[in-house]
Length: 138
Image (cartoon, helix red, strand yellow):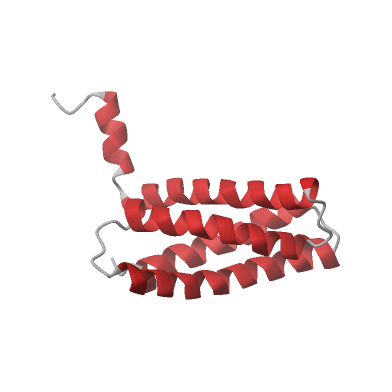
């Protein structure tokens, strides 16, 4: 079999949109979490909600680039239209993510890492559906 080589099989799996979405999401989430941790631990910001909103901007930027050029690369929409719709979608998601972090950490004094995981699960569901249907329309 000419296409049974393990590297080909791995590459073929990565060509599937949901797998690409997960890979892109993991990278964007890692960036988001690292910036959040930097803001809280190194810069010693008092509000996890504010620190998270700033961190979200970094994660969102990575997510857009990955979505446009890696996950939904078959979209024919112009970049400016995609960027506008993406920013609206992610502004709503970032506000929701920040609100959840504010409530979980600042109000209920719970661990920010657990709050981040909860808020991120919400973000994943909203962003995949929103990107597929509203932003990149594929």
